[in-house]
Image (cartoon, rainbow, N blue to C red; front, side, top):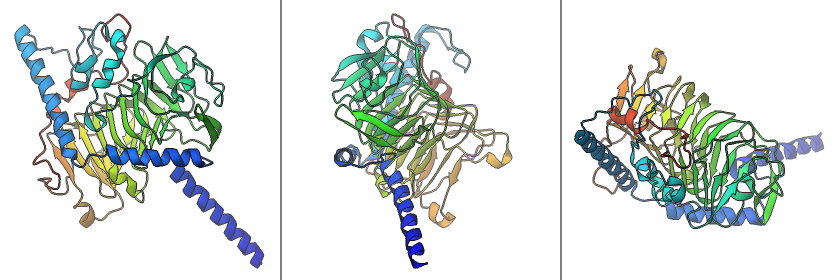
Length: 447
């Protein structure tokens, strides 16, 4: 009997260790010297990327938005135009770039000859992210993903595992069904402009223990768990992976990540997860639909490394069929600015473990359900505790009875900058997010 109890205890301990390893190492079955080195290097870069004065980044962002809209108003006055057609209906007029990120590169007929200009356009906490700017172009010509240990030249997987910087583009429209996680190496841009590219019906995109990544203009949907197995993650390393979660994009222990103009829906787990000390992230101009747990920023209250997490969420449209977590935050600093929340079933913005959430110039349209009018949701804390958390709403447009429950110091005095510059108010959001989601860019035409 004693032997049986000891065996049961050892088995139970092994299971607990396995679960802990899964949480700590995100689907890495064997945390070998390669992954130890990569994790250590990523941690160092995250500490460097962390900005001790986050208000300076929010102010820089808001100032850029003011400048673009003031310029637009001046141009409209000069042409005696009101551009009343900027609603949610499909726009068929001349090219318009309605926010500072898009104004930086869109509406240029020769954008395809100057693709790398995009690297100059990032705003928010991911400022300075250049992706594959210093590398050569690599063209994806083959939509297959049949060999994940020795990927074929011409496939997306071959490009993302290279150690050198690469600016990855696509030869034609394609649907890529990933057979296992697509594990991206540092200094990469995935630029799908000029083609209609879908990552669909297969495994997720994984950004793990790396830095300096740009993902632009992809459709990502119907992502499933992958069974795991041997998967190559670099030209000189492959290893055993456990079953993947089925996120659309998983950002794990990474820094300087920019996700722009993606359309996402129907993923097994989250659409975008940012966890384990990831920081310097901007998610902009996205369109999100048909999903329950939309975005998770911090996976556990116990992950204290997420105190470094700094994320800008801007110019996104949270649309039909969404339920909750837009985002759900832990520990870090989150600038939620100029987004359009037209749908949610439970709540929009939530969190635990004392995150700082600055909500500026968003539009929140509450659902008809009277029990779901509150935008915010706080977990695992009594009111006496969460009242100390800094959750501020400034210039938000609250419609259909939407309620943002604020907490913390209204003067936000704990940051170095003397004050937060006000964002453009929520009444401008329809314009700022008008072209959210993947764009229909074609070579030789304005995007």
